[in-house]
Image (cartoon, rainbow, N blue to C red; front, side, top):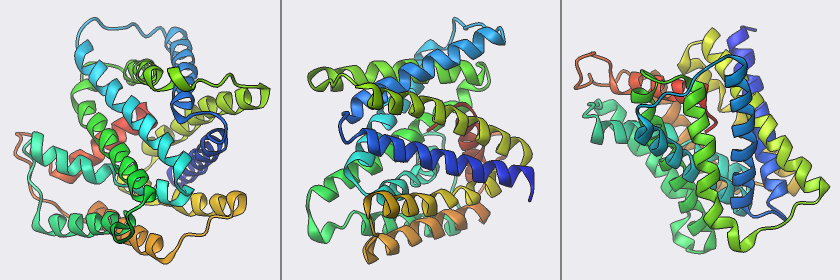
Amino acid sequence: MKNGVLMALLSSFVFSVMNVLVKEASVTIPSAEIAFYRGLIGTILVVAIMRQQRIAFSRKGIPMLAFRGMMGGLYMLAFFYTLAKLPLTDASILAQMAPIFVIVLSALFLKEKISRKSIGLLLVVFLGAFVLLKPNAYSSYSVFAIVGLLSALFSAAASISIRYLSKKHSSYEIVFYFTVTSMLVAIPFMMNHYVSPNWREGMLLLLIGIVSLIGQLFLTKAFTHENAIVVQVVSYFGLMLNAMFGYLLWGETPDAVTVAGGLLIVAGCIGLSFSKPGRSADKTGNNAFTNTRKEEKDDKRGNVL
């Protein structure tokens, strides 16, 4: 097995474990508090790495760094909330919408053109998301699912900013602003619902921070050794792991609607990975999905999302 594929599989496994830890911690700890400690632990780890590698903080581009951090923080809040409220599989499928929103936002704000074939595949993905929202039976589930879609949208907005930031800032500095800002964003949401963690909950919170960093390292190595498209396709292995963990730990069995919506989303995303979109409107001549893959690659190298 190729090293890149192996690293991608390991990253999917580690991030699935992180999702399990978040869902378990959310039984007694509010999702905003989990996001706060995730940001706090991540900040400590990143600062330690930056000091060890003697990476200095820049004094320019702070507003964009803060914007990227805020979008990442809102993503983390929304995703952790979705993990707490929805079955593990459902929350994971909704999170897979992030690359799709990147393509849409790139077309809207970066004026990148999308081919007709890509538009058709995008419609398939959004149909899957619509099915997954279960609009025919409006309930609290649908509201939680919408929050899950918002988490993917916030993640995409954060990814869009990576193209600009990666030209002038190190990935560790970008991650630092992400972890610090996500920690600050979580504070207003946790103030009235703070729960003092006991030793078990404290260990869960610590593991969430450490495991997420390990997952990022595996993913970085995967992108170093393998094509970004292959890594993206292999990452769908995480959906199967999440479904397995959800069934084994919480007895969650995806219904037919969830399976149908999930298949549409995954099939559409894989199709987009191998499609040949239209040319970009920028001078580089890169196409929309190639740029999207680069943004996603840069984002995953420096983040969690």
